[in-house]
Length: 329
Ligand code: SAM
Ligand code: SF4
View 1 (cartoon, rainbow, N blue to C red):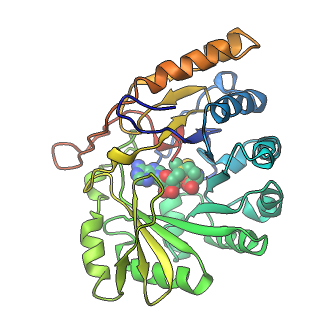
View 2 (view 1 turned 60 degrees about the vertical axis):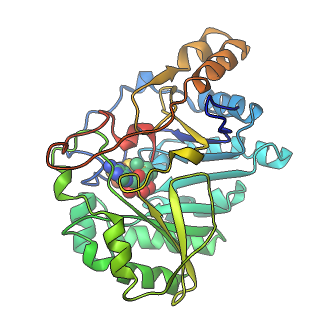
View 3 (view 1 turned 90 degrees about the vertical axis):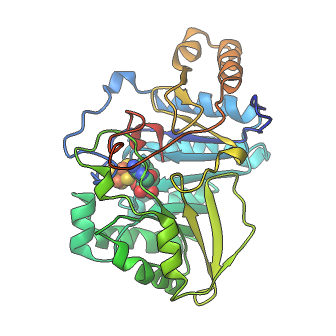
């Protein structure tokens, strides 16, 4: 699949549920209204959609949410999708999780051919962690991360940098990742969805963070490219990789290789734009995939050049109305 700007689309991210057992302050408001269950695709339909994308050249599939591991019977989706790893059509099957369910599922995930996962963790302080996630328990998440490591999964920790919250902890988090053997990615808050708070209060430019980190660590740029927004350095003192995802201070769209599917079968061709294509109707209209394939082709032909996020005093509200948990982070 080649988009109008000549970019090859080889990476699909799928949000399998918009629900979550946490309520992270930058992601959700406390009282979220979730999608009616009847609108959500079944696991069989999700499998059919993913498989159609794989036949069209998707090589990397990331399952996300919401919290993917709170969706009932989710392991069966991973088990079924792993057939594409066995045939070699799919190169990587992975997920992004908040870690809370990893104590239960880590080894089953490893059995499905998953090699690496991203786990989100924004603080090493249990009280702060609880405040930030509203409902999360740090102990449980760390237990989950250990379970994943013991199951042989490589781990990357995702940390959203938040002004006046975890900005004082970033050095400690980098050291902790180094000690435990994990890579890490720092993420800027993105203006997605109403969260019942002002994002200007949360926004911490990573350009500032990087300058500060350079006083403590030796950061060497490395040419590790994922076709995504992260720019990577190696941290000499820990020997691990550190990524910076900077949608606000750095435009990363020129090499974009991905599209995102929601759990209702809506395809977003860009995280920061509202244009979307409905794939649920063509999926349900016929048992053959002709209509679905045509709808996918038509959507890829509309992939926009890029996004334009701004967070400042005049633009504290969302750039797009949907939450990250809908489109899938
Ligand atoms: N629940 C899983 C988790 O937390 O890892 C997967 C879904 S979550 C939406 C995926 C990633 O998006 C997480 O690392 C989270 O920190 C990040 N995220 C959520 N809302 C964000 C926002 N407004 N700006 C930047 N990152 C955000
Ligand atoms: Fe849930 Fe992940 Fe959003 Fe936190 S970031 S509320 S864990 S979906």
